[in-house]
Image (cartoon, rainbow, N blue to C red):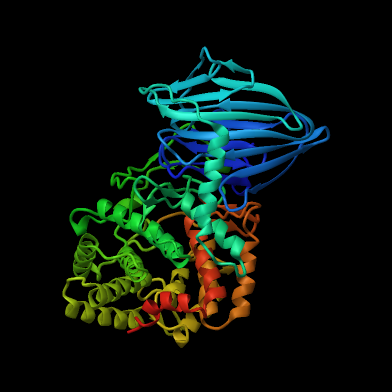
Amino acid sequence: MQREIGEHALIGDFETAALVSRDGCIDWLCWPNFASPACFASLLGDNQNGHWSIRPAARTKFTRRYREGTLILETTCETRGGSVKLVDFMPIRGRHSDVVRFVIGIRGRVAMRTELLMRFDYGRSLPWVTVLHDGSIRIIAGPNLAVLRTNVQLETRKSDIHGRFTVRKGETVAFVLTYSASYHDLPPAIDQEKALEETERFWSEWIGRQTFHGDYADAIRRSLITLKALTYRPSGGIVAAATTSLPEQIGGSRNWDYRYCWLRDATFTLLALMNAGYFEEAKAWRDWLLRAAAGSPDQLQIMYGVGGERNLLEWEVEGLKGFKNSLPVRVGNAACQQLQLDIYGEVADALLHAHMGGMKPQKPDLDLLSALTHHLSDIWQRPDSGIWETRGRKKQFTYSKVMAWVAFDRSIKNAEHFGLVGNVRVWRRIRARIHDEVCRKGWNRKLGSFTQSYGSKELDASLLLLPIVGFLPPSDPRVAGTVDAIEKYLMRDGFLLRYNTGSSDDGLPAGEGAFLACTFWLVQVLSQMGRKEEAREKFEALLALRNDVGLLAEEYDVRRQRLVGNFPQALSHIALVNAALDLTQGDSSQHRRRNDVRNNAVA
């Protein structure tokens, strides 16, 4: 039986990540990187599609937590005869990638069992399994190789590995699974204890740089750690989620591959990290952006692979039944070819914030921003596919135009303060024109609200970002009207839909959960409007949706009361951090300085 999405925790090594269930089973892992074919894919199929379980043989009560300030997962397993602690982590990657699993005896004695079924290529490839002379087990299929090392006596049955063992109080049993290319030498064994110490030290030092100690500090830190774990360290890219095809509605077809680097999500991530004081990540992302976007500005994509790859061909995996029979299971993402005007504004906003935060502007990033803004001068009037990547006809989306305004506004400020070269006079004229057009064509007088697209009656939660990006001040009555309309028509049991999929023409069957980031945006807007009590109440309701280790998916099924969509979702955690900072640091000098660029940008 497939475990619920929210029953999983994340471990990772900054190049890939695994999902571990509440009862100690790794249900998802892609090697060698986030977007590689999965070798454990039971999350989208069944156990025969690959998994690795370690658990007591008897009936067990499971509780778990992350070791404080780290991505080291500790699961306590209580049985009648004793208890053990399962410690799961991935060391910061060196030459090879490792999954380390310790079973530590806490009380009495506990009979344990383990089952490891590796299935490369999304569960479709049975590997060749060989016990080597030193007792290690080699698992190989095509270009993929893994080696399992442990002192436990294991049994191999064709492609499967099984074992039973007993752990007594004070004893520790270790398992290390190491990945390498099959055409390289067998990867050497690691010092597991040293790897644990180094991994804990890294995370403790990294999160220790975040000095916030106010309300919601634990939630902020867990979200920051999650965002950092979704960073691909070799390139600086940031993936939107660790998974593909977890459905936005159980049984539905809105199942997408999120293991890529969206410019939008990456810039939102950076704004959250920079708001928390992490500017090294901004520099790494800036360097990734320069490489990925190199070339003609008219070829800018909304997303890239972790290394900056452009070809993200979308196809459907046969042989996987999908999560709770939600098909299709997709790999790749055809939305990479869409025109989405908002990404120009998000990139310009992130670069300006980085420059204001002390990252010295360099000629290459200023040249890129100038070229993108010049190109936007020619295309900003076009209809596009919008922030939600609709697969219906293109429209004049209001949010897209607002972010085009942001792009010109931030480029003007980069020119004024950091030497960006461009036709600033023309940019100012276009900025004013867009502002006027949005206020005329994007506003529906009858609804008293901005709408999803020009002339439309549809509402869209992305419009909550208008005051957040500085297009209008929070005190503007048009902001209040838009907030009221969105709450009235898009709220479901306290949580917001992105838009009404039943009445909006987005080219897809209707139905999805409440989109968590949108409700966090509502928290921010209410806070900035001075409605602090309402904002805090909604924020704490959102925090209650996190799973037992503080993670959020993309959406929430309000009827079934469970997390849905890809997991863990960067955008949900980004929005959590920014909403928490608005609630708790809105009056601090540092937070005001970060918001100055937006608040002073209103035309």
